[in-house]
Length: 506
Image 1 (tube, rainbow, N blue to C red):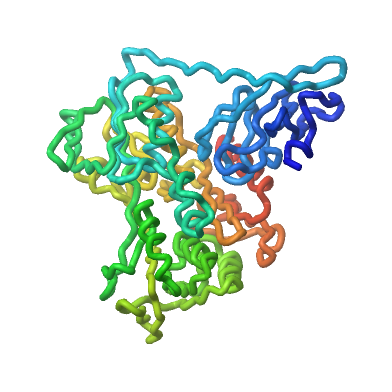
Image 2: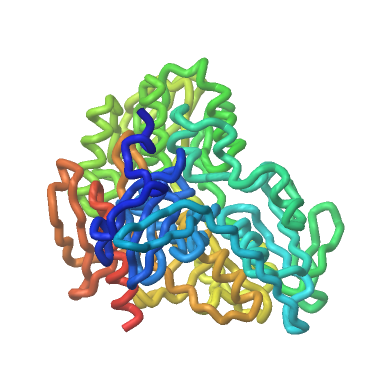
């Protein structure tokens, strides 16, 4: 029996009394799962699952005239299903709802709203985006969603069209995700939307006076508005043997593919670094029955980011899955068969994965004379020190109103949301970037959500049991809530997100 067979047939109708104000009900129309809601006195029927990774939206949260996904906090408009906020790229389907004689019926799909068109002499004639990652791709898509009809050029150093980077160290490396799931869009999407996507293209200079970019091949690309979204590059290990062919980083799709191509020959791996990427890779490889040893200078993994108790929970989770840890030490040398540690241990290694962090790629901005400080400095509108040039994603350091600090974070969803805001501001919207930072990390079947930004804290309030992986922890400094970390508390995390938004806007 399918899921649709088990739920309410909304085409046949339900009693109005089954759906009070604020209520949600899962049903189906034909074979399609539909979520029916009553919000603000109005009835809505929308697709029942998030278009990002398929989370059930009945477990989500209605905020105003939107609904938020419980897993990764995508946001959709109830009225038309519009994917209003990343990480979702695709809209939800919507249906017409009729209520009469004490019954509610859902039968006809609503037509997709027509695309707006922006035509103004004040708009830039051309927008150039440097970077094909989360921020760059979302910026290009947002420009078209907002009705911009001018020229869009995306110059990406990557050889692959924009793809789902978070999946690389999680399901794709573990072998649970198919290759066709990884691209963000179909091969013809960019041509259909008149986005000139140029892959393997290196930008070497910005001429601000002439408003043009110089490419590595000597050609030039003019722009009216420019978004720099060059992202970050992995930090390389600096020890003898670090350049051997079986030593890998994991940042790009090409990096991941090289790892996958070597899997048949691998029986044991050393992961250098207990970072999110390092430990996600460790989890993925254990699911392939590969012996994994993690080497890191920390005494407890992730304690600097999420505190010792949560770090200990992560450590014990990985140990329970058979991962061996070698902490408070570092690699001293690598050869073709083994990794020698500073503490004298020698670990056999067919494969070495280095996950010791990334550095923002700010050289292009610095050479152009843009203001930088451990990132490219932008204002609340994501505009750099040069009018008409914006920055977004891993390179951008912005004034965060939630923490009251100037921060730079390396999170996929933050990059997407910044790309969206930068695009709107290129079109003259003057929209402040004020989203609460959010990311998730996946370890086996345990997902850890992180909301906000806390570099320092003096108190952690915990509701639930961290060791049992069912908790929500609030990080505070001088009584101010800075961040929330949770496992198994999706709805509470959504409520915390709304509360943090309201606190900072009050």
